[in-house]
Amino acid sequence: MTKKLTRTLAAEDAAEDGGMPADDRTTCHTHQSWAADCEHRHQPLTADRLLAEAAEEDRRRFLTAEHAAGAFTRVYDDAPELDAERAAIEELMATEWPRWSGQEDPGPRRELMVRKAAAADREWLRSRTPAAQQEAETAAILLSELDRTEGTGPGAQSPQWQGSGGHQEYVRAQYRLYYSVPPGCADPCDDDPCAWHQR
Image (spheres, rainbow, N blue to C red):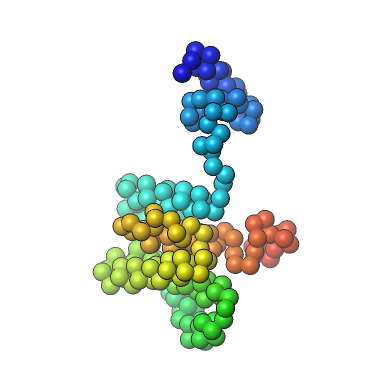
């Protein structure tokens, strides 16, 4: 690192702390280099990156004492009450699943599989029984296999979901995305805002 780069980094760090927009920098604080030299290392924001970052956040939280208190599962904080959600899923499985299974559009059945896998994950987090863990893992694998086969889940091909606990992390990431951008709605939504975003 040259003296000029060191001085410029320090000056721009101070200027940014004082309110200068980060885009006005000629240096990169992250890589401690000239911005032009590391431009190729800054990848665009994509759904895959958002999911990967969310999964990494969950993984770090899992390794802290905060996880024991259940804070790491905040993705489910605004979810419907678990027993009511499971009852709704069972009703949809009985009444709608046969019809959805015959459709080319995987959207409706995928939505139900996301909800089913998330409900199983929540049950395991609540009970911590081996049977609940097995059910959660099975539902998570079915969802990830559907997404890899149909191409319906952002980031489904990423190897990060294949490690220990990865399938359930994938469920949490997909559930977060499901409630952030509902099926059939673009982001930003065309209706600006749509009925879902007005909730």
